[in-house]
Figure (cartoon, rainbow, N blue to C red):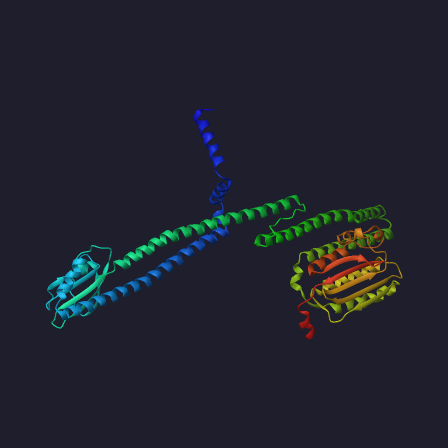
Length: 488
């Protein structure tokens, strides 16, 4: 390595070591994406508004101060004029004017005494009035030259009884100096204040950008790893914590949907493989025995029944997917929940009696909920059919609907074998069937549909022990529209 290259490398190393990381990060952000942050754009707008407010305040202050200073000047001129008029009465007017000019030959006070024809007798003004009263003229027009910071002169002209003119006035240099002072103070105070607002906006934008990038990185990590990673928050209750809460809820739902998709794929592959294999074997047998019309027809009928069963499974899958998509919320209305329970009780009571089971119902009247009537009816039907199919003859099935302080509670209780505690959460998934129910017809989608509809309506679903048997509890949210409907 040459000496020059070594010096360049050493200089770069020293610069990197001596530059604070925060400064380099800020510079990097300013160069790249700070201009794209809402916080910095807001700070820029605030700085512009602050500048406009300062300009408006300066203009208003200048206007008020200018009017006040001009009023003060005119008051002083009035005082001077009163003194000069008194001197005119005493016969000492010329001497008084000469004395005043000797003291302030270059202003800001100006005087003039002329004869009746306008010839100057004493004074330092070149302006000749044409009328009595106030006159405002340029400084050069009043003096014949411009030798100060003033730009105009306020003059008052009066005429004595002998025809002579007497004029007293003052220039506005004090107002001009005051305006320059105010502008200077504005530049000294306003510009640093505007820069400070921009700096604060830049720092705020940097902090916002870092927190947003952190949330985004954690969300990407959670999605890529598909783990149970939870986006952390600062527990300050600010907008970032609320965003983290919403992201966590979204991630949980995304994981649930992804797990459900994997589960459906695996369960469809396993649960549908057996009936499809059985159907294929049956069709092969029919081909081998195609001369036997009776067996051929019987095999085709069995295959059609098997296909109908598969189609019913797919319809149930599509129905669950439709419910989980939450598009059905647009069809929600106020539903008479008591009437839904009574309809289910009247429908399934004779079915239970035909199966040798006892069916009882306790339903509190005039209870309403906001939801989809058809889906709520499907939920109750699935739960009752589940109890009818998985309990032996002589079992008791109880359907209840009660109003509590927390809302409305619906219960379906049976006295059958029940579900083990470790399997209660698993049976709510698709295609899950316990070993004890393998011999009964079904696809393992009934309770999955119940869980999907409950989630759509915000119903808390719980499986418990009826000692003996299964207890399914549905806690409905209270409906705000129910009282109005009840009065109608």
